[in-house]
Amino acid sequence: MKSVQRGDTPSKLSISQQDNYAANFGEVLRSSAMFWAKNNSQVKTTISVTNYWKYKNAIEVNVLINLRDINGRLVQRTKVLFDASEVFNYELPGTFEGSVEVEAFGVKNLRIPYAAVMAIYECSDSISMVHSYSRAYSQHEIEDKRTICIGEESCWTLFETAAVTSFCVFHNGSGHVDQQRVRLGVRRADGKERVVEFQLSDLAPFQAVMIEPRNYFPEIASWLGGLPGNGRLSFRLEGGFTRFLCGRRAVDWSQLQVTHSNFDYSIHETDKIRDGTPIAYMLTPTVQDLELKQEIVVYPDSNLGQYAMKGEDFELRFKTSQIVNKQFDSNSGARVKFSCENGALPSRIVTGFRLKRSATTIPAECSFGVANHRRPAKHFSWMVVSHRFHSTVCWVDYEEIYGGCPADAKLVFKFYSPDAKDPVSREALFSELPAVGTMTLEEMFNQHRQWPDAYGYITIWCSYGGLGFFSTLTKNSSISIEHCF
Image (cartoon, rainbow, N blue to C red; front, side, top):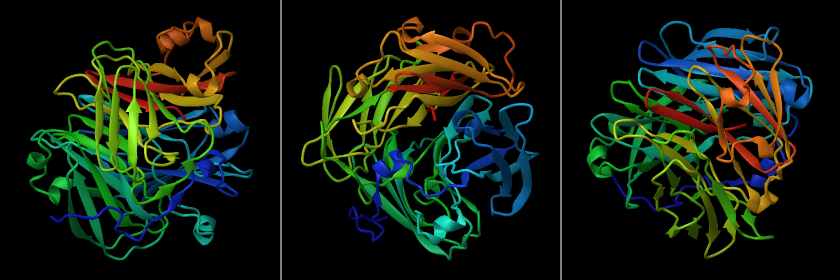
């Protein structure tokens, strides 16, 4: 192991949040998403796709699902037909580990090259879900140099004990990668970081790579001291986006929780807020489960600077390289605002929140972020739900940015079932919703009694554009939460 100087790599990029808000991705006729997938007696993976292209933007698409083994070899290609339903739940055939790629092709501009797809992982004692994190670039993006293939990824929670271990999975794109030196940084709760470098063999096209830190850092459990740490990784891909899956699992695979990484902003740059009020907000929802406790995490690899984080009854100051954990003794949502104390506030500060139930249950973690006054109003949202796994839908109101949701704001809820073509609909005023900010499927659609066993989707249109929505899945003592698309 050796020490490392922050920002000592030559792979600095400028990541524009404004381009992301404006969907400045060029002409998009193909969108895609790639996921790690495992299927055996311990883990069941479901890739859930809904035809949002049609019901959101009235665009017809053709969808292909490509199943590849861990080395990138094509095993099966499936065409998705939305003839009988607007939802397709793809389940893996037999015993398998590798990747699933979802590709959507349109004759009109799809605007966003990332397909909005969900992966759900079920184990004997847990359920976890994650939205699209990686993808293979289209050829025109590669030729136009609209790619990020030099990986400087962070925001990866590490937790290591005798019973729990951490891992990540990244996906190569359509090109070959020669053998490379990969750099893994492991930061513990007190901010100290140690780094290990190791050789990674050639990567074949579409190969998936799983990295388990304890294989390269045998003493990691004792070094982390039983507390959550943070991992960051430097690596190269060819034709693939560098975001990766972050996982924590029981050693016996009885539990698994996942989220996704984010850019290492201590290396990469992002745009700064230089107009208006230089404040950003993070709001977490109230989750309908009194046994849960919430925890906010601010990942350590922010743009270099010193920051303040202020809530209703606390104020914390931190700087880049510090892991910030703020624990709450209830399931009630939190309202936190961020400012930068030594310069312009970056548009991106990567945060997350955890839902904790007991010492023996791996916490859910949702990679999230902050919002500021540049964020466009959002009127339409969609999310995966399951009656079998006791889904709830919860929401927050960014009233500091949008002024607060009026009592007479109109909402339209639609439930898209995998067993029917037409959705079940309900309209409501905001004043008619529970003041606590969370409701069950039964409360949302009290007239809908025949719930499917498989995953479905809820869409929500709201005349007010400042609400943010989340959905949950629960199995036994395990819960998973993800923000909406």
